[in-house]
Length: 169
Image (tube, rainbow, N blue to C red; front, side, top):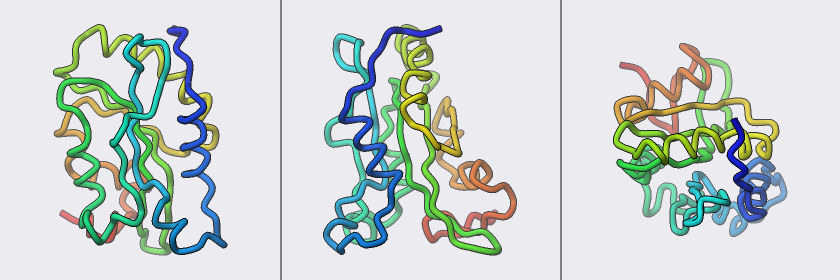
């Protein structure tokens, strides 16, 4: 079911910037790259927009933000829905990887109307995010607070670290 919601150009630009990792990027450019970002519906519920001030920049990781995953989890509102992109850095037994994860956050405490609008608008944003390998619908903090859950989405048992922290029990 489509909701008629439009994805703004800013959202598409952010996605494209996160998707394309520029090998020749200077240090300053790398610091400004987004590690995570939240998207919400505009007040009139007609557009999917960037949520102002709800992002993690690569330059903040290791400086003002020690654990980007936990910081990201704390950015999610406890009582409303959101879409998010998270640039996960992880290691398997063989190699180090980075993948974008599209997350649909629909906590149980969110109003029913909000859940319905976000759920019916999800396809609009997913169609714009071409090439996303991992999608995750999360319905509460219990589903997302443990980094092992994301590690399983990324590569099952073969993932040994996420954001530099071990995922073992």
